[in-house]
Length: 60
Figure 1 (tube, rainbow, N blue to C red):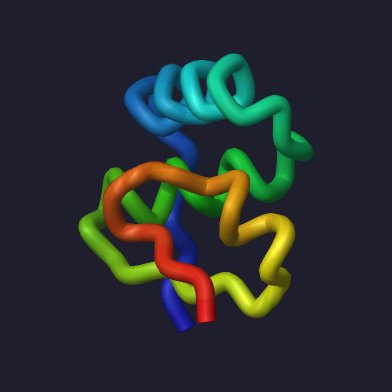
Figure 2: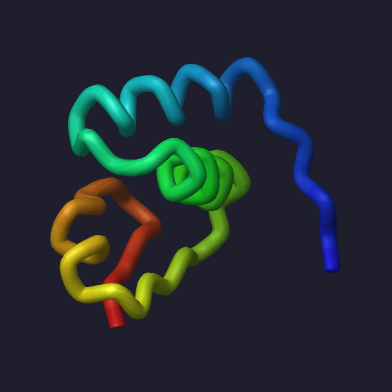
C-alpha cells in the first residue's frame, strides 16, 4: 500500500474537477490523485462513472 500526499497540483485538479462535475469532494480527490500520479482508476458505480469524464478514470 502506498500513501500519496495531496500536493497543490492535486488540490488544483480537485477544485477543477468539482467545478466541472459537481461530484463529492472525496471522489474528486481520489480521481485527481489518480490522474496526477498517472494511475488507472476503476469505478464500479455506473452513475459515478458517467460523471467522471477525465483521462485515467474508467467505469467498469
